[in-house]
Amino acid sequence: MTAVAPGAATAVVPPGMLVVLALLRRVLEHELRRGVDLRVVAEVAGRPPHVVSTPGSVAPDVPWPEPGTAGPVSTAVRHGTTCVAVRTSGTVDWSDVTDDLRVTAGVLSGMIADRADADDLRQDVADLTAAMRSREVIDQAIGVVVAHRRCSPERALEVLRTTAQRRDEKLSEVATRVVAQAAGTRPVSGTPFQPRKHLGVPVSDQQEAGNRRT
Image 1: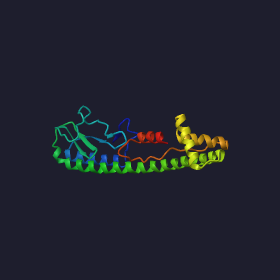
Image 2: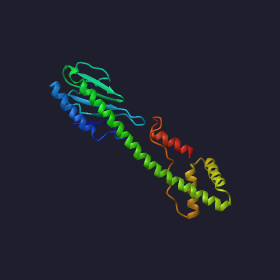
Image 3: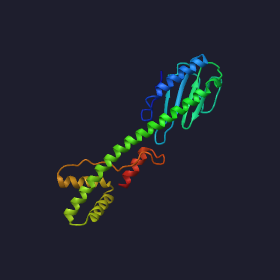
Image 4: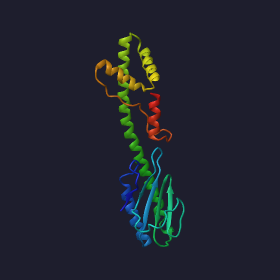
């Protein structure tokens, strides 16, 4: 049985990860001839580290080892940003299972990276859709200003930007208000598109930076 640690709900946990850990635990207990606890700690840029582990019923008093260390009752193997640790209640020869731990760490590292990429792609699609809505509202607002002031679209955009800066608002917010006043209804607005993967910057920071620019 495996459990996701508290606070890991926003982290990347591939569905097959728990299955892999269950199989690894079965293999280790067969080779070591004793029960074990497992713990996986993975770090993905832009997300909080997530921890998946067994409940700790085998050796709850044994501290989890640091990555790359081995002791008489615990050991840990790291692959990239993923660490697989195992502990037990008695002294064992960890060399018998080191390869199993190393291979599993590599498999989990790849699974986590793939899940993170898939999540980023889905979020990019959603953000791009929202950004397109935002662009549509801004174009509509430009049309309203052009008709009202009888100016060029370039001048209308400049007017909207100046208004946004003076009021310390986003351009999309000003555009939404202009269109709402002209049409009598509030259009659906979005937020500027910011790719999920950008030099390892957390998603929340990307969104905040994008909002300041728009």
